[in-house]
Image (tube, rainbow, N blue to C red; front, side, top):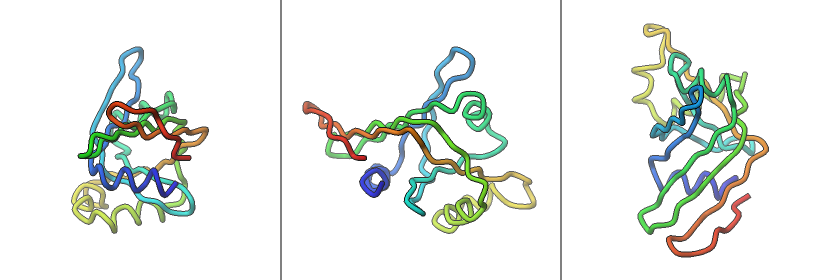
Length: 131
């Protein structure tokens, strides 16, 4: 998991793919952390992405680094019930507390991927498994 987390951290922004009916949807994300042997991601409970992952948890994350290497991380989103994960993400990205707080009523939902694969791919090279 550390290789996946390190790749995401170096990339900074990554893209999460879901489906809305039969339409693919992509969006940039950055909120993630490694904890308890999992790479965890944070999304808002009020956002379409949350509803889309609830309806169909199959997802893919793609991240690109400055050196041209990119990673494909594919799996099934499993949402966490322990709020310690959302709190840990918010500690690492305090600006998100402006969105996720009691005043707004918005809650950060966290998930990790199960049944996952992760491949790092060089611009013109073969993929290397990261898990």
